[in-house]
Length: 565
Image (cartoon, rainbow, N blue to C red; front, side, top):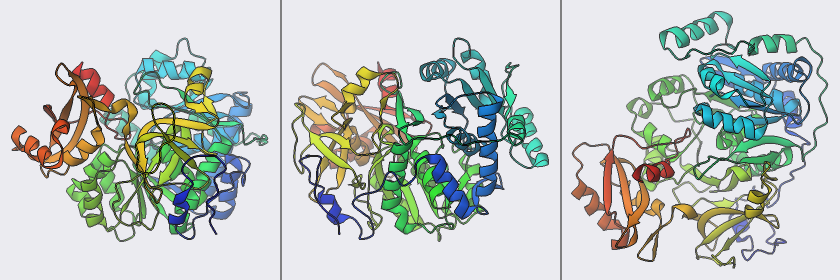
């Protein structure tokens, strides 16, 4: 029986518990496992012979993942003499090496620092310096970037790997040769002291590994925010934070997952917090398998891999789902086994959601989260099998508030900034006490997102507070306009920003990517006037062949604002 008691003192009284499916609990136990290492060992004991990952046609079983990650943990401790709590950076796309290195770091009691492989030398140098990372595991394709960034950092050890290194020897050599010489994917670099990851694993396999004691309050990740509004900050996520959010995620969606039987298409990068939680950790807990897609932007190659497997789940952002829907080979795939499609990272648009369900027969479950919350805060219940336009209900053991500009609580149906309290909320920002104090007060995290909550507890994210446009004193939210624009059949993608205006303070500027080259400016504006009141209709429209996106496909409004300036 679910309770609606709310010890947090928030105005909203957990009315969402009444809307939970009957098998979803109101509370979770964040202390079931002492650490992520303990959780992994529990999964290995249950699912040892099953595949945990598939890449380029090769499987890595849970038992093999245990052996290799244990070897890497031993090498970090005994081969490199690193200490518990040291930060180790990971800079690679979706490869078998990623879970091996990640779990080795966590089992050694060290802190994983995920780094975007597409970073520039200055961005990489900043994150290595800020985190104080003493070692980095990096794919050779990006070693030239590290070479430029390495001076003046605290990195003492570089572990280098190539795409084919964990594949069978002959196949791996062929892949490495093709990537370097035929595709030119490995620019010249000079890192003479770099240690081949394969050598580290061979040596580590011969070393004794004594698991350290890991407390729930120990750091597991320094997960850096996107940095779209300035320098990125390292969110300190403890083992308890991550385990709590995993328990919340499993409580909300575990009832529709069959242990040991699921196959997830992993196009989103595992170094991103969204895929890290859903694809990597949730599927580890339920004995699921990840089909790793190294380059999601190469849709033909990605779809070719999907065709070989009867996949049951997929994660994505709106732009990825939209791109797949426009790929004719994808449209011909067999979707009969698909029963879990999860969307996050940005607002899911109605046209994309409806077209996805019409094609696959599966509704996209939209959720809401942020790095500082490990990341999941809310998600649509699994029994809601149609587009709702909301980000769903708060997950178990989570409280929310909505506050106005003065910090006063607002009620159902009113706009306010979303505040969150729960065991998944980060410990703070790494070495940034002032920034931590600005967003964390009395356990409540200020998200910077403007939202509403209805009578059942469904959250609707109106927009990012910083993205709101003020037109002649009226609040205009880009998400609303983008959703309306994307209903036009000749429009593939759209983005909206506010730009300075002498007449109205700010004006709405719209960027459009066409699916049909015959689309005209008049058609766009006429379409907007059908769905939007006058002050929301764009005053400026720019057609583009593509929009700037993050590595997970999220449209970067900040970059568009910078370009306009």
